[in-house]
Image 1: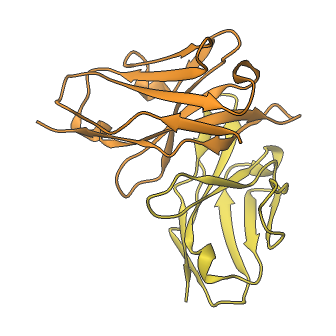
Image 2 (image 1 turned 135 degrees about the horizontal axis):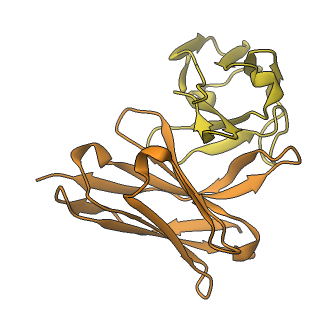
Length: 107
Length: 122
């Protein structure tokens, strides 16, 4: 089965850039989607199809995907960005798969 | 606005069944599939399965095959997820979400319900 690997935690100071990675075998050949989840709330889609932002998501959120790593980049990080972020792909054998999630801490 | 409203929290004993509902509004129900995702306490998101609201075709996660059934009622725009033979490790928040597809054939979830807490305890 296909496995997605995320770092458990990432820390960043306000105003700086946060990069959250999602590793998988040849993940660059798949479409990667990213979700933000704050405590006690449902996930929110922040990036779909590698780099597309749904309406209402700030331009500070961007995504890229190449080789064995996809990356969610959050520029000019704000306190309100503190949350768990999960990547997700679709695989022909495993169907919809989520990474283990990364807790973003704003220092 | 597009929203998915889920049923309330449930407490069940081991071995029992639970059925969670998810009522859609603000869009044409049969134009999008529904996925179910659960999250155990302190854990990540786990895809459970998906159902086509158009023809009721289902796909289930392998580890839940035989214990889970997903259905829809197109007359009310409601999706249901039933999980049987409950165990303590089924304790989780259960989310429904609207399925979207990409031009490459991938799937993602763009609108989520608020979640239903299911507690399995003797």
